[in-house]
Length: 69
Image (cartoon, rainbow, N blue to C red):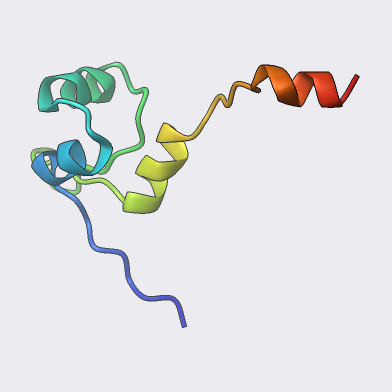
């Protein structure tokens, strides 16, 4: 059975991601990061969605491209 994820506040999300709170708020405003506003005020994040956000758009290293040639 999957354990329920603990919702992260902006402070906790900033610590989790290493991003500043101001930058997180900018991403929220631009709708570029998944977030939840259950009451229209406070913002929450799911840790797994933050990890997906952080590890998107992977760039290959030079040695990886050379081994596929």
